[in-house]
Amino acid sequence: MKAGGDYRFKEQLISSAGSIMDNIAEGFERQGNKEFVQFLYIAKGSCGEVRSQVYRAFDYGYLTQEECDIILADALEISRILYGLIDKMYKSGFSGPKFNH
Image (cartoon, rainbow, N blue to C red):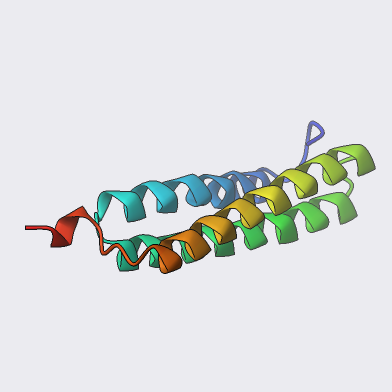
């Protein structure tokens, strides 16, 4: 983002991006696959939020076309990876370590 950009907007984008990682970590720590998948979906939603904010940042002139394209491609790849992990978790049939007592 170029200098002088909207500070609040920048913080919102940073927060949404951080939410992706935070939800993956929180879901993993729950040690149950159903909960993990739920948090992976939340992380995937945050990824969509990041993409939306990147489009707005470009519209406001905070990002160049090249920066926008790079971030959108990365966010889309993260979303695809999350979906792949969600699909793998559903197909595994494993309930998670929390339920192995």
